[in-house]
Image 1 (cartoon, rainbow, N blue to C red):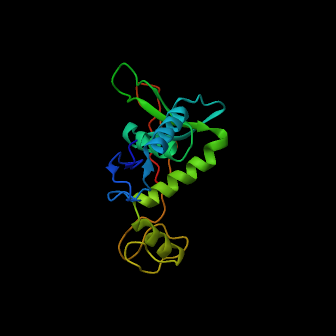
Image 2 (tube, rainbow, N blue to C red):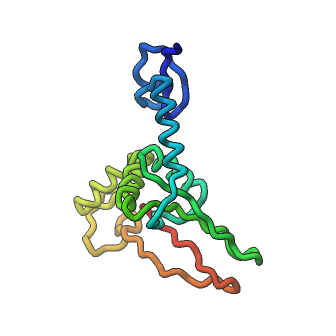
Length: 177
């Protein structure tokens, strides 16, 4: 029986006495535990999503990354797409779908994951809470939309979907997390 351990994230095999992955820090699993975890992930990925809701729309690469984050967190999800127009004006539109029951948990996991990959945002949020510009630290009023010292835009105003000329389709909104 092989007693070596496997990293559930990197798939790297380690000697039995090692507890954590040297690359990513994940807790290592026995071969049996790893096999069970892989089967659970596969079942989550194949599970039909009833009463579904769109949690994100956008780039396939980013949605694919979030898909893996959700599956690792035990959130069943799928990616769907609408083909763009045949005139070449519109791009394919991709959506990450979860059940309505998992929608809030999925949104929280996205925010958590975004903070994991962009740790510098925590400091920016703290400065903003203190009424300071996240870029330069200068004091800013609660109703200001731009820092008077460095020019940083402090408020993002989302615009309504616009009809794309000649296609009848709508443009993707760009959202910041």
